[in-house]
Image (cartoon, rainbow, N blue to C red; front, side, top):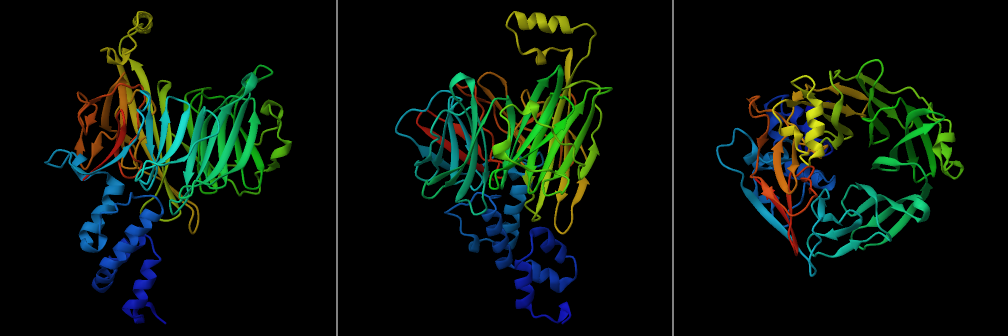
Length: 482
């Protein structure tokens, strides 16, 4: 039966199985298709799908059926572009839509940091640097506490928002390390340890997605240095080991059945590359994890052919700050947005490096504020989809604001920085947004007023909601902006 012969109910059922990108494309077919694609019930279904995928924080007091189709589309724009009142074209100052407060019976530690999990129902609460727990926002109930103190950790929220997989690294006796991967039912608090892996190497940049877990390892063996990427399938208990040239800027992040790697070749020039490997490729050899040695230097690493190879723009100076982030695409299923933030420091006057070291020796560590120091920062984005086939698209790079530490940017491009101890700056990483450019004399655009906190930790913004998290003595406040 031709598509134009289907009744409206059948077309509505087909559109309900599509993502937002396909629905928006359907509106451009003709007038009748536009009417069907702008159905209020369809857009309520699309908003619920975003909440199920953890791309929008649900509001129990919000009734979607009372909103118009245009207002429902504004909710999607909020996820992709960030709060409307943060835009440089908005005539009004930032406005809070709602506050969610989590109260505690005991005072929180001074160095407490909070990470709001996708969906907005739970938070990671880290008091000091090694005391980690998951807390329910609505009740303040502690859902999960690790059995020992944690050195580093990462997580992956399952679709639906009721289950999470957490990996964390612990220290044992004689400085022995162990990596634990646990599955947690957030509603009941039930926890199952899926993997415990003792390891002696120094690991960093953990990443977890689905059945896979990865860590970067820098090794020196027989006077030769190299960077290793250890990938573990914690369900099948197998591992793969990849080797790369030594680079202090190597980063790796997992995608669904893929891994993204970026590194800098120091010889002969500072040439940077972005690689994407398929974890289901026949060229990738998976070994049983019980046969993995505790020192990975003696293991023969692999050099599989990458699925995607992209040369990044060369930097005249060594990159000082680098951040690799991956986000789910709210508009398209089975697609991801990859962003690389890099900032290279350059000194405008010759032979001024001595004075930088001299100021640091006398306790003045904020040498970035000196007039002869300047940073060249850029934000590069890529779109990667795997359905129905792998497609890699390079998005236009933009000039970026300078962050003093690798920023945890939101999908919309906002982040929090602490240039001075205790001073929080909420800023737009993009120097160009909606046709408004930030001039060179003012390289950053602050979207909120600076805040002073009695802590050296920064709580990042909500990845998709851009929610602001404030930590008080007895409470944690989550603010959602319009």
